[in-house]
Image (cartoon, rainbow, N blue to C red; front, top):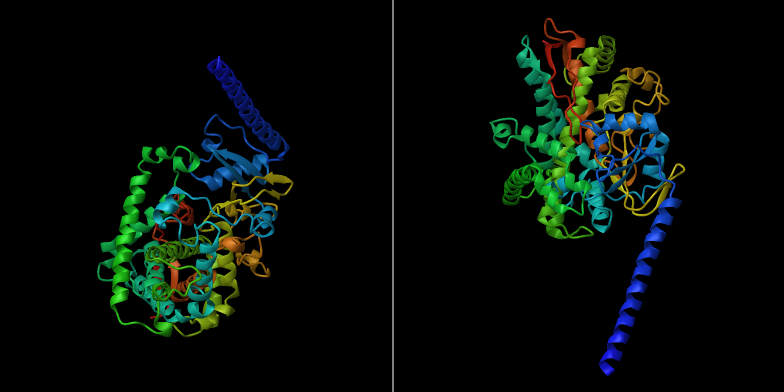
Length: 507
């Protein structure tokens, strides 16, 4: 009888606990459903089961997202696999994302490509918001990319621009692959500032395969990884060749950085303005002067940020600038007249000339408007619920800003598809993160900290190219024949190199 009584009581207890558990689960499900009903999410295209809206991204997400914005409005909600995503495509909403809710939207999603390439996302661009990121960004702003530090590399910029001119001049009267020449300049000026040496001479460039390495890097960061959209199914990372390619690219970068760091540690310690960016980081790492200790992998991750992102931004902007100028002869003539008036009989442009080149600066702004190097800014991730416009954006939502679409918004720009630097001649609008119509470097806490460095590298080179040469297309080639197809990646560069004839202006 005692056993029966015990069993009876046990079953009652079991059913009671089970009922309570079911009630709790139902309560949470009900609350979740009620919360979803209360949420006023942005307009959304129709979804497919499981994949949601993934099929609507296409091969060129900035174009696909713009088409969706044209249909559903400047803020849309997408369900990308398991990931809730919001995309904004207007200046006003970009202001809310990057300024009003800057702190709440300051984290980054942990993407497979970024984790694989950047030593577990310990760089500046992809590190999640927190004490570590605040520490390395402070190092970047105060030590690596301060105005004083950027000015200390002026001799590097001047020497590399002179080499660029010399390389191009050697080809005349033959056809020059200008895109390749610009790529060598972008690589060398960044490498010399970051790690103290260029690699375009003596076979080093080809030995390390820099351009292929950088191309792979950009493609992988912007590439599609199924696992990023289905984080609960981590095994799907192994279903594609992307993981293998990430591992190979990482190993090559890591081996290269190991060689460079070993060389830096063996050489005599530099002082003051002789230091490159790696010297500065190694000093901070050795002395433990950062707010959070840096490991050697952290140093590599930060240098990779500088190395890869800085090179590509410079290359893309200069390549597009020369392409648009050669396609628009009147703009080219006006730009050359300005530079040659300011510089005079001197063959070399000085950095002190740059502030007087107002029209050239307008050209660069127009390039950033039409061809932002990163057309869709690196995604942010919400750390709390926020309201953008009239819509709710829940915590743990990825948020994208389509700056390419903003730059071509007909409500902001007259004839938005036309290359017309005149629109900036009398305008105070700039690209430093205060004017949300023009955001090539982003804005707020997660904006690119290398604006001053990148602008200096671009402006001096473009001014010198305008001053040193008269440009024309090869015989039989018209501006309409230029192929401006872009390659898919986190940044967007032209796939077909620009071939020109560059006649030296100074004999």
